[in-house]
Length: 167
Image (cartoon, rainbow, N blue to C red):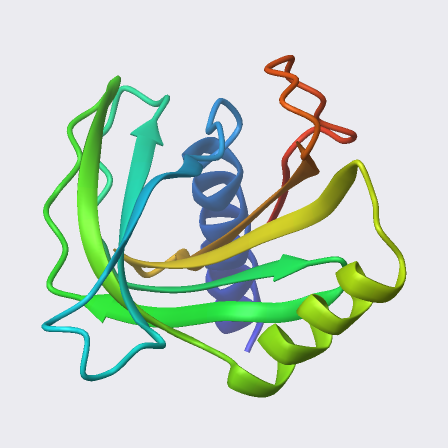
């Protein structure tokens, strides 16, 4: 009995040490929207192809099983979509992937109504991407980036917060 308790305790300690050594220097990937264009022949006006830039700041490759993303503007979920069969992103590199997305008709109308009734010089946005990985110790990474989009023609970067990550 004492032998079994010792082996279980030893196994637990080795597992805990292994998990601790897997991610101390792991930096969260970064996801940016770099392009949006209408999808298809215009028959589906609320369908888009979105180009996402995924940056891997780590030395190990990032193997993605899929992605779910959403873009909120002024607190309204405007665009969302999913993709799978994504390419491996080598360590210290980036990939631009094209994914399909659908816009919410109701929330798009709400946003347009809000902008007509309360004109603003900037729009607050939040991009949230959940990256599914092939790693058993970290099945997904959620990356959130937020800031403002100036409407007055200003080109200055005016992010309000740093990107955050949840494991």
